[in-house]
Length: 104
Image (cartoon, rainbow, N blue to C red; front, side, top):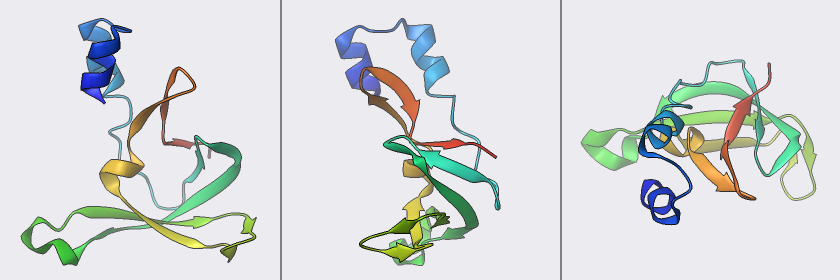
């Protein structure tokens, strides 16, 4: 992501630093978030866990629940995502945005 932003020349170096520090706060259990791709769909953080399958690394993962009914996955589906991916900052429709944004 940093390479892309530098490559397209959209931001100055100090702005890039600010952008990549925006969403480093760990999600808090019970907090409700919305996903960048569909702000109408909300999710509640259930737990922060560790993925034991990657051996000694034990990466943190976020376990969260959809607060809506989905045709494919049903009502209140449970999801797991790597912490880094959950905190990721994206370029979406020409704007810098958090993958997940806290709303409550």
